[in-house]
Image (cartoon, rainbow, N blue to C red; front, top):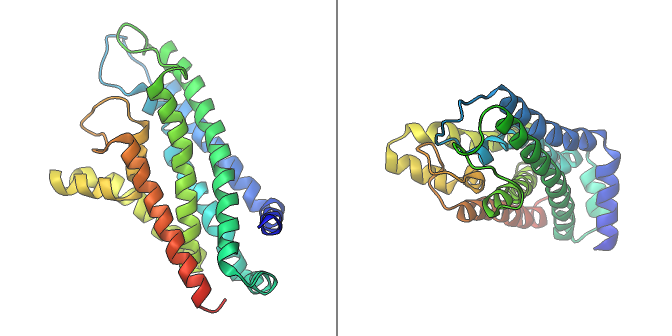
Length: 256
């Protein structure tokens, strides 16, 4: 396993797209969050704004490079035929997938944690400067439990989506099909779920990977995802585990 991890790390670290997607995760998470925080303003009279979630909103845009990184980590080998060399060198195909999952998940977790911490820290400062300050609004910091849960949970959510993307990429073996399917799975329920009848819309949002975004919520609002934050994150990881399990079975059974 150590040799496989080293080999997979060599692949990821020497492909230029891996570096660019990692930077895109960081840039979009932080940049979009700070952009919206800078453009927002309040009279300080109070309201139902979820300041924690508002400072982490860039996580939504970060899904695009996360999905691309997870999918391309395996579909790029299928498109070039390199996967045949990999499976010839390492006949135990399941371990190849495990090694890829460990690396992809770890990379996205670390980058996501740096991004969410940075976005939250500077986003809170901008929001307070723009009128979202006590007594109308709470002054959140990384020492507060809900804020810690949202920041760490955002990084975990990105890691879960990366693992889901890796699994779907192994299932489809085609970059465009995998990426388009994943983006539809992630964004369609989030966008159109609230437009469906109340019971149906709630169940759709609770049962799809986007439920993981509930981990960022600290205020009960009408547009909040109707699921417990930790349970929502569990749903995202359950999707990732299911995709990787199916990919594990298919990789071992079908031709490269």
